[in-house]
Image (cartoon, rainbow, N blue to C red; front, side, top):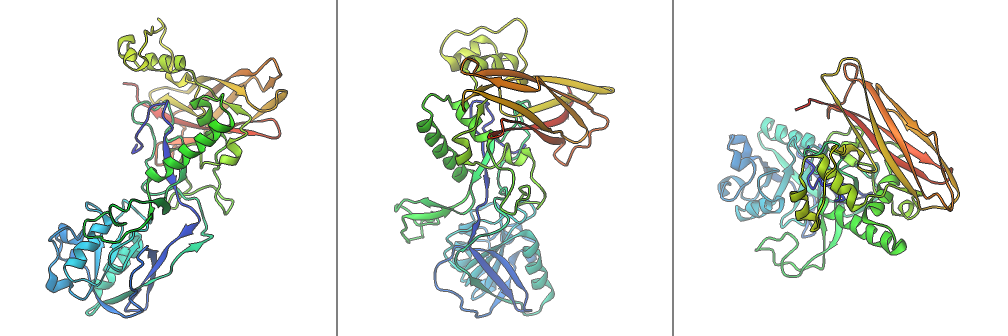
Length: 446
């Protein structure tokens, strides 16, 4: 439930890796080689072994994190220092080590970052390690009387497999405000991205960094989002009549869910197969989004009905719409917003099988005469039915509606760690595949 920016009129973008990496290697005095990541581009250590120290061995939290003024120069001078990730900027830890006289840094992930690594343009020779390798280094320091290490930098490597992988830092569902709307919507490239950079500050952003560069390597959902913004702009220029909702629908229903090994995409933090809570509808595929076949469109009025349905009154909604609105006597159901994904919340108190029906409308944006038939990948322990079985479009008929009914016995549901089961509904005319994620979860009625 770490995903933010949850409104249904926002495209909510998570981050994935790309098939390029910047590997570095820590070589321990016992000959063990541990692979990590670094963008350090200064003078190399050239294989020379240096004494290795882990200030966190003392049990002082600030020292384990290499926070400002936490390191004793007598302890770290001339040594490679192991620092834990968290609380302060990764590059700032390197500056603290440098000021205390250290020659290099090993930046170790904690359990929360798992094996998720991002490159940084460090001021001193530094290698970032995943939590397993970080633990290996700390165990080596504890068990050895004169621990030593060096760091080797390997430049740029392309063709990394598997990719994309969902970044460990990317926000995860479920949607904490309106769980009826699946968030995130999709993921895009967001790890170690080549990005324009100001010459007002150095690549670390630290005051003492005097280096100047026009480009930097940056990571974050803040890098993934501009990929989607750019894709949306290209889609809008190709299809000027498409609404923002149609553009998002085209990106979501054509997104990839398999990686470059032809396997389901996995999660960087755990190595497990990713679910819709991690990657939404999947990874952006702009080529396919240009010609999605069908789109799920949403009008301003649909959003007003959605807001009425989740309990906002006309006077509050008017603040957004800037024009008078009225809510229907019968509250619209928020899950009937014409969203390209379907989230079924079944009451956990129900005895026996419970059903929920969802209404969706698709607009044909492909060739005028088309017949679409559905295929279902039902979530485990769930029955999904769709009526009608096919959608027929002509010059005159551009829109068709259908009803998806989801039935499950909540007693028999076997949700994963995230508390949900996942599947999909796809419509195809033989040329296009229009895929919507389905998730089913139990919810305790308030």
